[in-house]
Every structure is written in C-alpha cells, then in structure tokens.
Image (cartoon, rainbow, N blue to C red; front, side):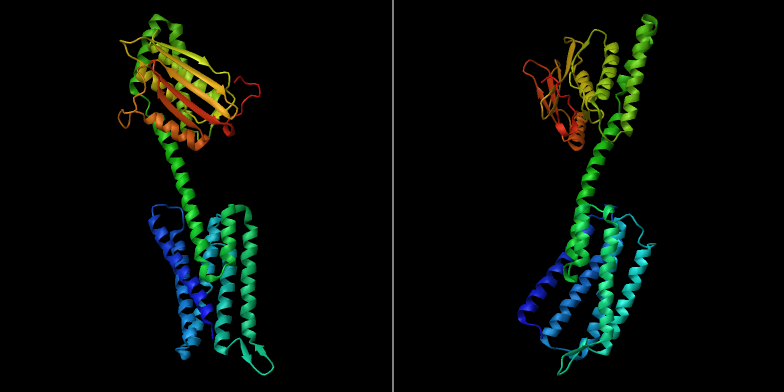
Length: 412
C-alpha cells in the first residue's frame, strides 16, 4: 500500500506533468505559423506523455484506494504498453534535431525493436504474476521481469550512446534538455520537451526578425529613387557634349554605385568600412555631377579598419542629400568623420540642410529605421539622429569594439 505522503507527492508530480503537457499543446498551436518543427511529431509526444501520465495517476489512485482489484492486472498491462511510447517519439525528435530523417534511421529501427521486446516481456511478466513472490525466505524474481529490466537498461544505454555520438550536432541547451528527457521520470518528461520547443521557438523568432531586417534592407536596395537614376542619366547625357571626360567619370561612378547596391542584396554579414565608404564616395560623386556646385563633401576618416553592415553609411548620406537639396537655399555641406573611442568607433554624418523632421510620415524615414535595426542586429551598434541648433542634422553611429578592428595608434 502506498503511504499518503508518497501518494500526495506522486499525484503532485503527475498533475504538474499533465499541466505542462497541456501548456505544450497550446504552445505548439499558437506557433502553428512557424514551419520549423515536425509539428505532428511534437503533438504526438505531448499527447502520449499526457495520456501516460494521466493513466499513471489513475493507476496510483486505484492502488491507493484499494478499489477494483480485479482490474489491476489489466491496468498494469496497459501501462506496460503505454510507458515506452513517448520515449520512442522523443528519440525521433532528437534525431530530427540532429538533422537526420528518423523514418529512415537505423538507430530508430533498433530502438523500435528494443521497445517491442520490452512491451512483450513486460506484458508476459504481468500475466505471469508479480515480479516477486513473497515467501518465508524472501522474494524470488520473475525471470520475465528480469528480462524487462535488462531491456530498460539497454534502452537507456542506447539513448545515452546515441546522444553522445551526436553531441556535436546539438546546441548546449539541447544537450542538457535531451539528457534530462532520457533520464528524467516519465511524469515530468514533458517539462524538458516544452523547454526544447520554447527555446527553439525563441531562437526561430530572433532569426526570423534578423531575416526580416535583411529582407527589408534588400527591398530598400531595390527601391532606388527613380528620379535619382533619371537625373544621373540626364546629367551624363548633357555632359557627353559639354565635358566628355567628366561624363566618363560620372558613368564610372554611377556604375560602381549600382554594382555596390546589387552586391549588397546578396550580402548577409558585415563588410569592411572601407568598402562602405567607397560606395558612399561613388554615390556622392554622382550627386555632385548632377548638382554641380550645389553639393560639397568633407571626409575626416582616419579610422577605417572596422566592419559595418552593408548599406549603412550611404543611405544616411543619401537621406541628407534628399532632404537637404533646396534650389532656394545655400549649397549643401556634408561632413563624414570617424573617431576611435577605445571601446568602439564613432561615425558622424553632419549636414547644413533644413534639419531632421521626426514627425514626418511613417514611411519618410524607412531607410534610416532600416539602418538602425540592422546595425543593432548585426553589430550591436546604435544610431542617434539630432537636429542642430544652427540648422542641419547630425547622425551619430557607434560600432562597439567586438565588431571593430581599430588600429592601436589610431587618433582619438
């Protein structure tokens, strides 16, 4: 007979396992738009674990109450059949996380054979009687129960061997949680499974957010201003007759600008700042040809040996030209500077235009918002925009040391 304390602890553990299983099902349902997991397998793991835990709670309650003694052998047989099924499904999920097709895996076939043997031995042991028969001298073990016990040990060893053989294919968190799945009591097995699903969901969300920022960057590249392209081609057309050498140089700069934009579409990591600076110079050279005598640029960039996200500086400068060019105002002055702050690099872009308008339409500063998001995601950097009292705008970017490779004697 089970003591009241043992029954209370068992019921508490089983009840918690059931609640966690239900929570897991809700989690899988809410994340149904994430096509990352083998959803049917996850649902099967949770449902079979809930069913087994609930049935175990019923069986424990029946034993505690001492009711329906004639049904206990049948209930134990059913428990013997249900017990190993979730472990097999967890192993299938484990293989999937390792990048293997569990339907074609030899390891899966071996485990399935061990599981069938365990169920057969367990049922035979239950039908043959209890595992031990009390006598005046002690208890005699049922040979079939010994076989079932050996099969359980064999399955546990098989789990561990498979885990350590594929150790390098898993993340640190997956290693710990799968180890807990294989070694934890059946009633709380849903907890590490749900932590696996939850951690994977969070990881996928962060990855999806990063990919979304990258996709928006690609859209921004493809949405080059039509009037900028038109003005450039028109300027080249008139320069061919007026100043052929300058027309050749402008064509070369425009070609380099387009090439850098197209390369940025396929670029997913960071790039050297020198490359982004070269792209910005090409863009400004084209704009200076289009607005002859109206755009002046000053570069003060002693620090260039660090990495940034592609299309970081050029969209900021383009935004300054776009909002700063006014036929009725003075010529546009743009300054670009870099400074080594020790803990990272600071990039400053200033202009003497009308100033930053934070309350413009929602799509007005799409390019700047895109730069800020990609800078934070890829480099851990920051970007601040402020309107100057004297007129104009200052954009300050900070790239932390982990992404910068500053020269030891770079000027402060």
